[in-house]
Length: 273
Length: 326
Image (cartoon, rainbow over the protein chains, first blue to last red):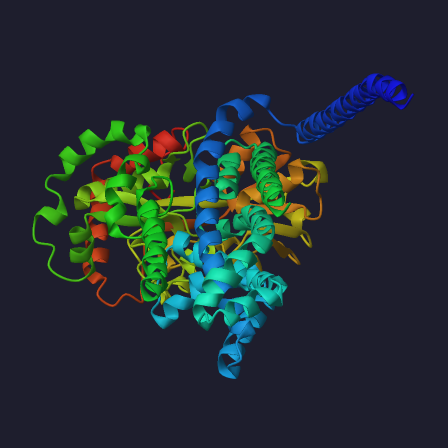
């Protein structure tokens, strides 16, 4: 009896599961299609409205779009990649300083974070480019921009790293200590790798934010996306169209890097299971 | 082992810095960091339109200055570097702009700067600081000269050295076509838009001090006040986009005419109010710059004499010769 019922159930159940699975997959696909269609219509509608409202000459997009994208975007990406690497290094030291038991080091790190987070990025950019030469430190536009972005993001990321280091379970360090691992090695081999895992999504997030903040360094003459867009737009008497292209470049970069970020996070989540 | 690992971080950090530097100088469309980058930047700096006018001009010039003895001082440093760093903000067509489809520098100032570098016997390379950073002086040798249509004023002479003017532009008042203003009286009490840190702003504020040879300067409309936008063209752009928070605009006659040609809602009002002598500028705070100022001043005089400037003006200003004062 039990065997009969069992075999009956075994026959039906996979069929039901299969159907449920199929209808779920169909619903999922439907949702996905609706999402993409609505999203796409909004994007087309938005860009179309801007083109119409701005009295934009469509040929400008074809003629000048590639120049703005091909010459501007590489500078934007280059500046941001270098800056995020330097900012990460700064942030690790900043976080160590914030967590240090030495009050003097603690104060230095606290001062750095407070000063940078308490002043606008634009002011920091102007300061590094215009004021540092008075002290004999003469930086060209790109290095000045990179240093400003690195210092700025380094300060915010210091807090991220501090939280990340503190989020590593205490037991991890204690276990290593019990094995007689020296303090520094313990930090580098046990705590830091786990902290980096915790903060990686936040760093990726900061990178995406930085892509857009990097537009500020156009003010000191770095020929990045916004700078090129504004100048070429003026030459062609199409400033609105140029700004639209600039906006689309940043938006596109953000979408691209968000996609990478999502993949990265999925991969890291897989490791957690 | 433990120690080695600790020190491994250092080379990595240095590598990152090195990568940052080399990418800097290798990137053709970025402002250069050091003189090493000259090779990469010369190609992009010279726009095709200028190359056409070059052969005739250099024949007239004879030998380049750097080939004979440049002495010491700033000129020698420029010759040594083999590159003249010229500041220009490509936001002012037709003086200086970026080509719409190639992104190359082009315009009257660009042509003049390229010719000056050519006669010095060095390559030209363009830096792009904003106009207010240029007229503020103290460039820290981030660029050597400004060929950026800078008006010679007594105030600016405190921080900048100038050559003789390489051209003159009349300053022209304009009004929003929608405002119905057609004459100077109409602008009485009006708000007039000007570019930041320009002589146009000084004129409205009553603080313009042109050198005597610049000629007569008209009085601003009674009760007129100023408002500024980052560059001159932004004023006309505001009108086109439907803003009307100011009725007047003061800029060079060439810029005003360009917007009228592009069918912006702009009308020219009255005669030019003053003539601006525009010259190559140098940072006065560089103590040994005499040699460079002298050499470039000589080149400008030569370019006036042999007709190079006239030809360039006619090319970029629709057949107009702005190199002499009317």
